[in-house]
Amino acid sequence: MSAPNPTASRNTRALNADDLERVIAIDRIHSGRGRRHFFEKRFANAKARPEDFVQVGVVTGEGLQGFVIARILRGEFGQKDAVAVLDAVGVDPQSQEHGLGQRLMEGLVDLSKQRGVRSLQSHVSWNSVDLLRFFNASNFKLAPRLDLERLVTDLREDVGEEP
Image 1 (cartoon, helix red, strand yellow):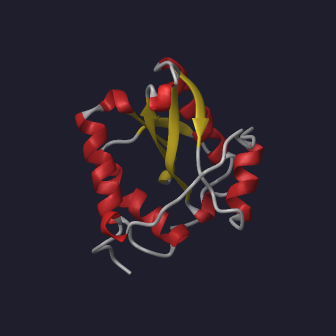
Image 2: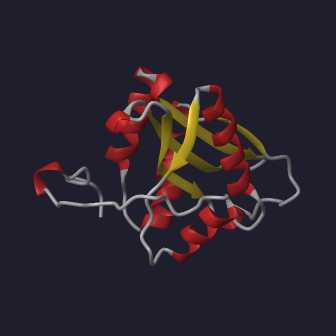
């Protein structure tokens, strides 16, 4: 595929079942592994409960060039306000640095507001410099909380995934 024209029309729209393979392909480039099971579950859950998910794609003349997927959580740990937790985001490397990621975030913000979401949240490894730079450019700030983790191998979502 040739590099998209950065000035080409960029539209955001909801993801649909036809986007699954392209989302998996873009994610594989960034993650270095196949996460088919994860994305199949996300797409199925979003179809079954659309009120609980926000999925946005950015499309150019070349087709789907990026995506963001978020779950909406309501009332977690006594919070009254809904939050959208970003589960996955990706832009085709040939389309990066042309504002597509920011278009995705704008689309996510717009749809999240329509669903009563008060804030967006995500988790990122401290050494994921590119992703941290993207979130910073998207106006994310450090949250006033401490994330805790306990590994439980029985609950791994990536069991059976492609290498």
